[in-house]
Every structure is written in structure tokens, then in C-alpha cells.
Image (tube, rainbow, N blue to C red; front, side, top):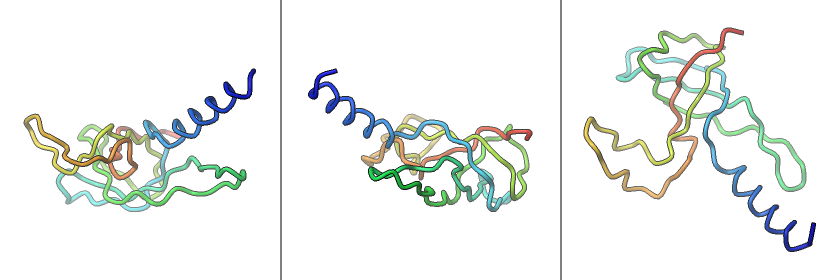
Length: 116
């Protein structure tokens, strides 16, 4: 592999590592009375810095839970999907997300619970 190819491959890898799609997480707290119900969650994947150091992701607060998920308890391990655009202005009709935020952990949605 040429030096140029390796350089481009490293850039692509670094970009891809910053795009979040689906991740495992642990429930830290659950608020069933919120509409929709929401949970504070800890992402279970760790990130790796360029020097190889492993770091925890920041806690995701107030992640909405889809209706079919049901009640959660602290310690549940859940699957989190990250919306491709900001969810702050979510409505029942098409909407402009308005923000530049993309694939951000702040737009995580709990989609299911693992039976571990």
C-alpha cells in the first residue's frame, strides 16, 4: 500500500470513528413520567485516542425511549440508535432539523433492551 493510500485510509478511519449509529449502553436512570419516557445512559463502547488511550464517552442524558421498549431499570443494557440529524425539533410532520449536528450522541434513542 502506498503512503498516499495509507494516509487517506487513516483519515477515513478517523472520520468513521466519529460517526455514531448503533451502540450498546447501560441505563443510569429512567424517567417514566416524561413524554416520551427517557433515560440517562452510559455508552458501553470506549473511544480510543490517537495515542491509543481508552476513554469513556460522556453520559447521554434524557435519551427518549420508544414505546415498545417498556419500563427500564438502572443497570439494564440497551441498544441505542443515533439519529443522523438533530432531534430537538421533532414533530408529527416533516421538519427542518435546523442544526448542523449530525450523528451526535445527544440525538440517541433507546430502541431495545438486551436480555443478558
